Length: 108
Image (cartoon, rainbow, N blue to C red; front, side):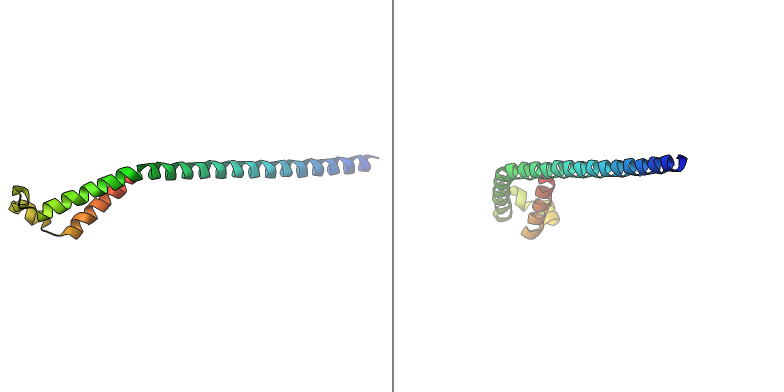
């Protein structure tokens, strides 16, 4: 009788452990699904933020291009300044690269 009762208790304990493991698995799946949903929402929000800034970046890019063109093609005192020429020369590529770096930081 005692052995039968112990056997039943072991079986019930094993069932309880299996139920606990299954509940834990389900909980972990729910947590993973919630985290994925939160991550996807955060990524979508970041993409929307960047996309919302696109018109400003395009305007800034056009403004910079106009300024750059004016600076490099101008006979103004600024471009005639030897210090400016010594630092930047007429290397449009370097200035454009600098702008891209600033723009990339601004978007980030």
